[in-house]
Image 1 (tube, rainbow, N blue to C red):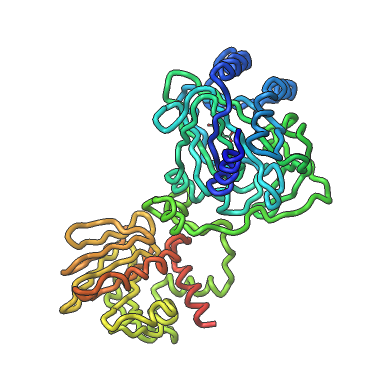
Image 2 (cartoon, rainbow, N blue to C red):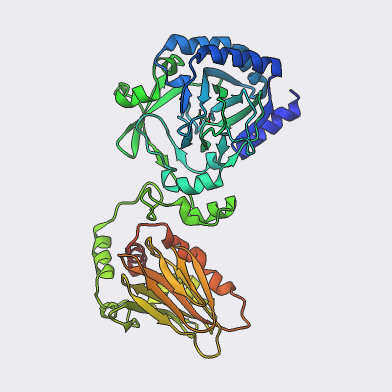
Amino acid sequence: MSTTTVNAVAHDLDELGYAVVPLLTSAEVDALLADFRTCHPDGGSGFETDFERDDAGFKVGVSERTAWVWERVRDIVPGYAPFMASYLAKWPTPDSDLPLHADWSYVDESVHPSYAVWVPLVDTGPTIDNGALAVVPRSHHLVRSWRGTATPAWYEAGAEGFVAAAVEVEAPAGSAVVFDNRLLHHSPPNRTASVRPVLAGAFAPDGAQLIHVVGDGDARGRILEVGAEFFRDHNPSGLRQQRPQVPSGAPEIDLVEGGYDPVSLAADHGVDDAAAFARRADGGPCLRWPEPSEPSAMVALRSVLGSSVDLRSLPWAPDVVDADPAAAIHAPLVVAGRPTPLGRALGGSLLSDAPPWAEVRLIRLRPEAELEVGVLPGRTDVTVIGLEVDDPPVLVVGTGWSALGAGDVARVPGGQLQVRNRASRPAALLVATGTPADVAPTWIGRFAPWAARFAHRAPGPWDLAVELTEAMA
Ligand SMILES: O=C(O)CCC(=O)C(=O)O
């Protein structure tokens, strides 16, 4: 392999988190296929990996018989050495999909990455239905996490978005997909009639200390320093049943640090629905992991804002009017281009430099409530932005009903606008009325990122409470 190619691999590994390189001849692939069949004489079902076997001798055998493959890989990732090898069998059965995940942390990734080397023994790729490797480019740099036994899956809340962002890698038989163990990946089921065999190896920097991370509660964990034999003597399901002993001096760590911004992530990956990167398993919106705890002052404000208390009674929101007390709370944020006290509290500088025609209201819509919003004389559009919106979403009618979720923007040209909250909890909407016909929607558009701050958090008035409390402090 030429130096240029090695550099290109290094570049792709760092930038994208994976690289595809040619590795084996077809005769070499055939030899490995024969070995694979010997290992799996009776076929099987679902997704199976030798890594899960209890038989350490079997695992050593695979590593030894495939050592020549890994020797070649050392030229592709100079300075790295193999410490584990395994055949992966994706049998042609509907249960053979492998859900989204990132691999274990095998080394201290703040110092250097480790890599998986995935060598398909049949052709795989987006046009072949045998369960190609699907990776989320650049996801290895997204969140700093330690992964092992009983550690949280930080990506779970965004799984829907990450799967939408994943690309199926074109990897013919005998090629190698080298990927960073932090990279999010998954593989769909094998819908063909034949098995999809893969030889996989794990690589760590020469001489690097191998580790296994053990979670201790949701947020903290311990690092075990291990040798390569740890991965032969244990398997993931065994470790889940019986956690390894952690010596008292084992370093303690925060398992997840940092977070991601669903909106820029969606833009980066061309995914339409940013909320798909931040949904709970039950379909509701969620906070980025880990959720901050809720201080008691917030709990108090949450109850105030979430109840039927008239916002007019609060000193920091003197301008609030109830358009229809039975249905909704209207809170003007900008009137004739000037932010109200509540607008200043909620919108900061964004609302301070509103153009003179701007009219913006915050609306809290009670469950099942319906509200009409009129366009001011001589103006054209109404823009509605969903802030705290549950599923089912708010319905918006202009020329026809359409659904508005959290973070969604609906522009309704002219005429009347109706909104109806179909959920069982109150919804918060931002409604900008009165864009003059000749004004491009740029200023209104600036609300979208502002609104997105609200869109991916727990439903309820939490976010408003946070903003207001910060403004009052
Ligand atoms: O072989 C596959 O489909 C995926 C393998 C994988 O995700 C893994 O080994 O971590």
